[in-house]
Image 1 (cartoon, rainbow, N blue to C red):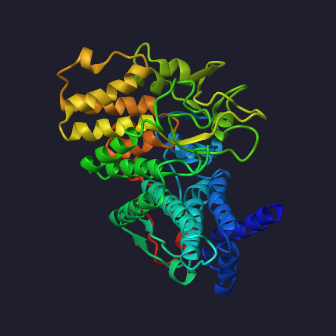
Image 2 (image 1 turned 120 degrees about the vertical axis):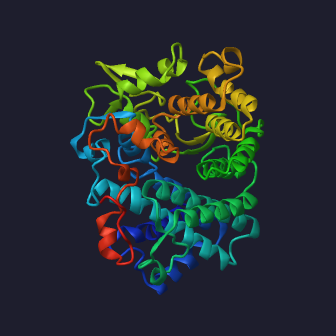
Amino acid sequence: MKQIISRTAMVLALIISQTACKKYLDIGVPRESLIHSEIFRNNDIATAAVTGIYQNMLNNNYASGGSNSITALCGLSADEFLCHHVSYTEFSENQLTPFNGNLSSSLYLAPYRHIYAANSILEGLSGSTGVTPDMKMQLEGEALFIRAFAYFNLTNLFGEVPLQLTSDYRITQLASKSSVAAIYGQIIADLVRAESCLPDNYISNERVRPNKGAVQALLARVYLYRKDWANAERYASLVIGKSNLYRLVGLNEVFLKNSSETIWQLMPNTATNTSEGLLFILVSAPTFATLNPSFINNAFEPNDRRRTSWIGSYAGHSFAFKYKVRSSATVTEYSMVMRLAEQYLIRAEARAHQNLLGLAAQDLDIIRARANLALIKDTNPSIEKTALLDAVMRERRCELFAEWGHRWFDLKRTGSASIQLGPTKPQWQPTDELYPIPQTEIDRNKNITQNAGY
């Protein structure tokens, strides 16, 4: 078994590392064939290759939860954090340049590494005779989910990007940008196929490999962003309806490993718990970011338990305290990617847009009840649509802060970025809503154009 794991790690490293070089995906066919024949020889090695992608997501990139993650960098770009590190002021002041190293390596190239790995796995599975049919379906579903998840983040960060559906460098190395609509079309197609491949239950006792519920949760989010309110409601309802798998838990239990609220988590690679806990919890003067006082003072209502449970304080600075463990050899928390509370908020927003105001308020009240807030049904039973949508966005801000850039993405998708950020960020421009394409990619590929404003 140790030999299998060692060999798989080596082969997976070959796959993942291809996009790290300057000539993105510039690899030869014989090497690729060797990789495929090695990985897809049997179920064990093929499975280890797929699960290795999840492990790689935590390696100091967009999914890590650390300082170079979407959580951290998009939180700076929005209005959640105050920056305490000079290397990240380009994000906090919305003055990014195409030469920013964190932008290139963590937010652009890292998702493409996972897309490349997913493409390679999909191709290898299709030609494999050593992987059993049931396992093929499982791994295909996971690879499609990974690709869809990576593209969802890429297009929300950069807008139009190249749509890579093959590991063949002859096709990918000079690919042009695809429209946002085309990218979302592929995301939805991948997720619909993944939904048919993956089982309802998790494949193990851990919630670190996506199941059907994870696919449906991402579909609900995708349809919300596309303003397809009926499908957003439909898929969120499918997830919420899985009461045997998912339920809301106490605020201090949400981010525990395999909590019942978890739809998908990433397991830390080291015995120190999560990167989020290590990054945000203060035990000395801040060196990265603290919570913006204006966010705390303006977003939370009096008596909101999320303010007392999820916000910590040290020497006059406030910090995100959703994860309670900064570092410990005993791992009790995993990095949360998707959870049930978001699905209630998705459904509330989708229902409000369909004028199902009573049902939308019910969903919002479920989240408010856990936070110890007065219920809309009691305080404003005749709430109007505009006020209800405002309430949804406020709940999203309080419930999902310091998680996966939700605030940054929400401001952009609702057309509120300039309204909310312009008054407090003197150098803000509407074109700042999209990050610049890294200059290294512009130089490498003559068919890629730079985003407006850079």
